[in-house]
Amino acid sequence: MEGGLADWLEEMLGHRPADLALFERALTHASHGEDNYERLEFLGDRVLGLVIAEWLIETWPNEPEGKLSHRLNALVAREVCADVARELDVIPRIRLGRQAIDDGAFQSDNVLGDVIEALIGALYLEAGLEAAARFIRKCWAERIDRLSAPPRHPKALLQEWTAAKKRRPPEYRIVETSGPDHARRFTVSVSVKGVGEATGTGSSKQEAETAAAEALLETLT
Image (cartoon, rainbow, N blue to C red; front, side):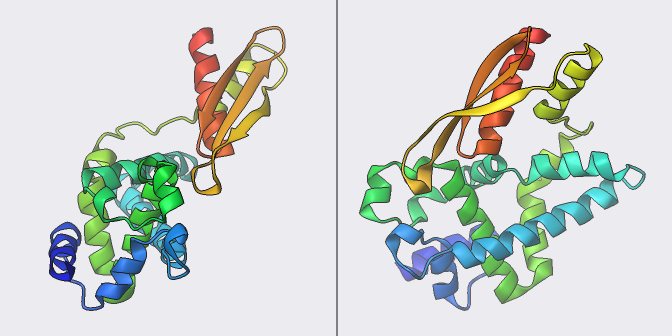
C-alpha cells in the first residue's frame, strides 16, 4: 500500500517522497483526525500564489499590476485547484472520516482544492521551491496559455455596468446557507434597483456572489 502511494506521488509530483507520512498528512481531511492537511494547505496556498505570480511577471512583462491580479485570482481559484485534483486522480487517495464520506466531501471543491495546496506545501517542505514550481508549472501550463487576455471578474463587470447606466450599485445578500462545515453551500442574491435580480450558489460567500453576478449579467447583455 505504501509502495503504491509512493509510486503514485512520484509519478504525479515528479519527486519520490522521503517522508511518506508528510504526504499522507497532505491527503488527510480534518474529519479523519487531528494530524491533517490544514497547516500544509496554509503553506501550499502561499507557494502556489508565489509561483503563479512569478510566472505571470515572466509571461506578461509589460502588464500592469491590476491585470496581473485578475490573472492570478483566476488561476489560484478554489475551483481551478479542484479541477487539477480531479485531473491527477487525487480523489481515491484522500482520507476522510465516515461522516464526511457520507456527506460527499470527495466531490467538494473546497476539499479537493485544499488537498492540492497541501500536496504543494508538502513538496515544498521536502524538496524545495524549485520542485514545487516544476509541479505547478506542469499542472497549470494549459491554463496559463488560455489566458491570452486577462479575465474580468463578474462582480467588477456588474459594478461597471451599473455605473455606466447611472444605476445604484449592486446589492448582495445571503439567501441561504446549507451543508456541513466541510462542504458548506451558500446561496446569494444580487439585485440592481429597477433592473433585476439573480441568485447564485457556491462553496463560499465569494463564489456565490460571483455566480449571482454572472447570472444577472447574462440577463443584461
